[in-house]
Length: 205
Image 1 (cartoon, rainbow, N blue to C red):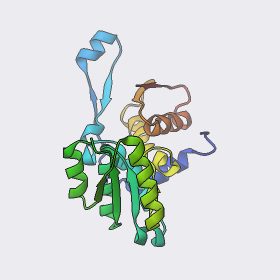
Image 2: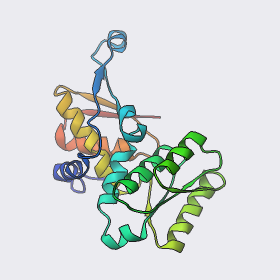
Image 3: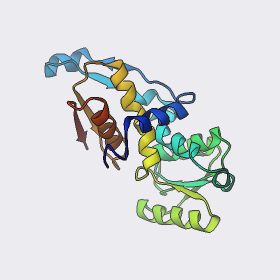
Image 4: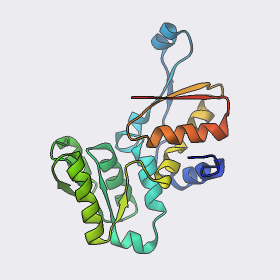
C-alpha cells in the first residue's frame, strides 16, 4: 500500500460518502493512563459507532461503490461477528440484499444482530470452512463478495477514522491500533502518512 494508492483525497471522498450515516465518535482522555504512562492518552471510542465497531465505515463505503447491477444482485461476506453486523447494516441502509456466512461457533448475539438488520445468515463449520462457503455462495448467486479487510474501498472507508482523529487532536504524535486482519491499521497508517508525516502508528495484536 502506498500514498499513491491512497492520497488524502481518496480518504476525504470516502468520508464524504459515509459521514451522513456513521457517527463521528468521541475522542476521550484517560487521566489514569496518562498519569501512568506520563503522556496524554486518548481513546477513539469506536465502540460507540453504529453496530458497535469501526467496521461499518469500510462496509458502508464499499457498498456505496457498487454498480446498480451489483446492488440488485446483492452482497455476501464472511465474519464471526463485527464485520457481519456491519455489512448487514450497510446493505440494509441502501436496500441491497445481503448474505452473511458465519462460523458455527459465532456469538449468538452477533448472529441475531446480523439477522435483525435483514441479512440471510448461514452458519457453516469453522472460520476456514465458512470463508470457503462464503466464496461459494458469492459465485453461485453472482453476489459481490465483501472481504473483511483485503479491499481498497473498505480501507478507504476505515481511513475516515484517521481524519477524525487528526481533527479532534491536532497535536497527536502516536496512534496505537489493534491489528486483526489489518484493515483498520493499514487505513490509519496510510491516512496518517499523508496527513502528518511525523506521526508514529503502532499495530498491536
